[in-house]
Image 1 (cartoon, rainbow, N blue to C red):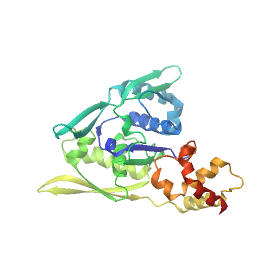
Image 2: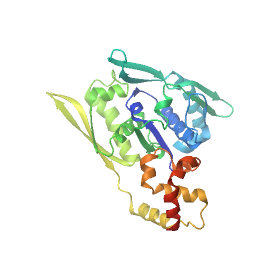
Image 3: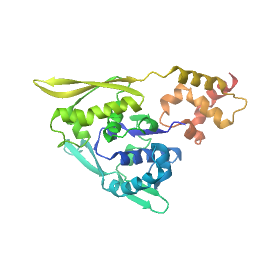
Image 4: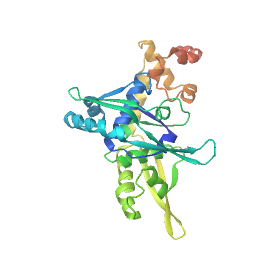
Length: 297
């Protein structure tokens, strides 16, 4: 089963700097909260075990214990910066916010518990209308925090295939304004590493060019496209579709199979996975007439 990560695009564009482990923990928390059907809030804890972390990110359980224990301390001090307008004056406003209001670690159980801050919850729940969506497995094998961030940024433009950004703006988003003052160092240690890992581990093929303003390079232009699915995978998917037997399936399996191919559902509730929507009859029942017709096909 694919595990979907959903973030509001405004959060993706925000400035923040997390370690790779911290990013993985936040992404896994988003996935786990969605799987419960409750989503994230600023009251309940989301618990992540070392075993769960190790399974998702191909780490041995012993090192996972140490990684999530350290993250329970460092993540509490992390901030993200959102930019908006001051309502009274109309001037640009800079908002400094925390990721979590509480970070706890249960040593003997190897479990980290996070309570997300009220400031960030609206941006990582399904309440927003503009989302960046991707499967957790697409970033799980990356070893660069910059690769994960660049992948998220590019995914906002994946339907366009090209994205241009000022170099200084990209450095600001990554919160490395004072690092890598020489362009060649920034490209070598950040951009080239990130692009290589995205190309190796994700579902995208990415390249980039430079743009000058006057005599200076001021912008990077990223070009990207989805990787072509291999024929065996396509054939496997086709066989799986043909193999679905309505007569032998449970009602939940029928509903989930129906929703996967329903255009209206994909347009209106694409941020809610079918297996979660099944638990909310008030929503999926709006498709009942179409579902009844689908059963007869």
